[in-house]
Length: 264
Image (cartoon, rainbow, N blue to C red):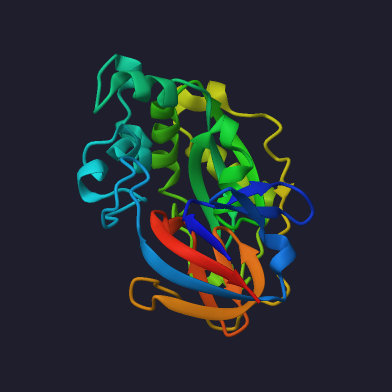
């Protein structure tokens, strides 16, 4: 039996991707649990920022930390709101400069459908793995988060910036022509960002997930409403655990939940 304060699963980009869950005293290699029964028991909360036993509000943070921590500023979800390149603070300029003033990429990724996204260059391919993308390709590489946000906003006129998590988990990705998608994206990139186009971005990276069986329909597990659950693990994709009875559990969206994990 293990106890853990849930954090997003760590990954290693192999064929297939390897997943690891942080637990007290170490980590669990989740790929080794495929085909085994797992029991999850909700035992409390712990804010990932202050460490206190407080109910989680969003992103693994209690309510006060969510509205105060620099790691949950609006620029996280909306990179075009980044201001560190102007020397202006949102909540903590030192933290924001460290995170925003580094190379970022604008990419296209195929999970349920083709979507546009932004991430720090150092986070590839982790970001694609977390989104459950089977294929992905970089379009732009820019020196800061603000410029990446400008590129993403422009490309949202042509591509979605959201993943349909149900279709992603059912493995219902649409078929696309990458060359055609790239040409459409390049046409939509603002003139001031043209110098940052990655010329070999036609190269598409393929990712393979450890899934034995995809569900036909999915039902999401909420541990605060269903504090105890047991099922046979049949796959891991994105940040989801997939069980034999079509139950899926989003580890990342449950960050800060305290759980007991038992393996049959």
